[in-house]
Image (cartoon, rainbow, N blue to C red; front, side, top):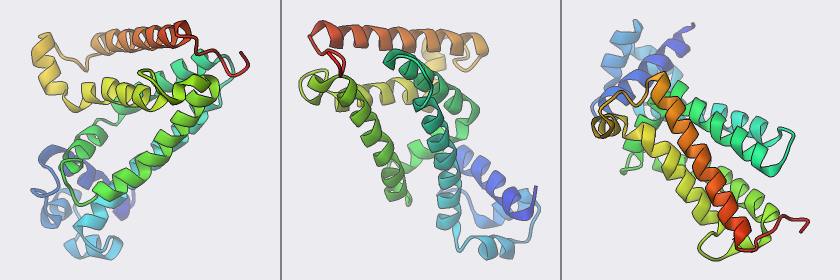
Length: 205
């Protein structure tokens, strides 16, 4: 791991643990074992450092989603692959949810999050509307379905400590995550069935 990678890894952990405001470049330098000046050499300031952390996450997330969208099979097969991969991504990158949650409360990089989230949302909406043309409107409109699934998946990781209190167990244990995956996929099947029951047929129907 080179110096820049050490700084990014340390900042990632610290931003997730204490938040952007409480983290300092001095502490990041000390924890990563580098001179503070090197942080400003590689990253202009603390805001740019957080931006680099977020950009790295979004690049990996975008690449993963692109791979899952291209898997062969039915529309449901692609959605199952996509949802499962998203769950895996959030589980493997738990700091991502914590950092984004903090920034969405008015952080310095809120515009970056908006800019990187919007294309993913728009692509998902186009996919749903292409498969189910009537999903352009009504209570099961594509945009509402996407917002629902965003909350269904992301909130479980963003509020893991509270969820753990509610469930009385570690929500991020392998068994609990398998249970969560089963639930999310069951909701996916239920919503697909509901959409089709309202006469929203496939693109070729």
